[in-house]
Length: 306
Image (cartoon, helix red, strand yellow):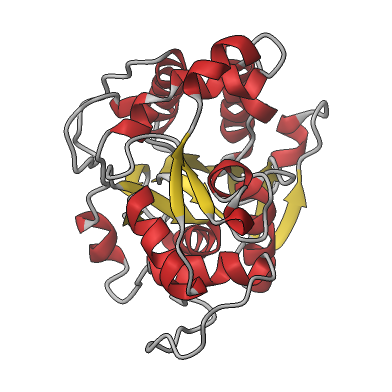
């Protein structure tokens, strides 16, 4: 059976880890190079993994539709199935837990762009193509300094504080990229056996900034305080810091409790357990070279497996 994938955005958060995961599982991995003919690159592949996004959300309004057009053309030409790491922007302020049947009511420009993108992939699925949307919350990866968790929230951890980007008590869902890409590999083995759309929510790990601070304090054996992210200052920073301007649009997501319903995921992967907040904290501290108080009372495995 064909075990060849084309990964778009292999230099990004999801794409780089997905490439390692697919190779480790015995797949042949092709890297798409921006500016080349995607239709040609996709010929002979079984899956197109579209993890391509403009850096720092740059020019989403134009680039996301352009990328989508190229992916759709490549899928139709090659007959390849398509997998997209989808986000939660499309739901806006809809009450959760969010699931495949939750209405899309985006309340931001980026949410609208993603919702329009997803509709085009739904049209592809309606033609009898296999399309998987693997939907998750914010990515976390202890090895990547550019995730928001590392770049902003844990930036001042050595000074004994974290930065809350919203209400400290709001519980949000996060996806460890190592876990999520294992799920992507498992889906690639069989999700194209039936045509149509699979909109699969990944429940991930859910915690608040307060719970994060408490877990950090327990593992470090010291007090960890919480400071609030200076959203007001972004009004001044936005002309020169593109990421700041783009983040401000998504502020609402940091102030609201949210969760992804895991019922469909559990039906497909009944034995899979996402990493706990304890494990995520341990891995982030380890990568930062910060000593953890011994004998935390629980042995933590080094990885999750399907």
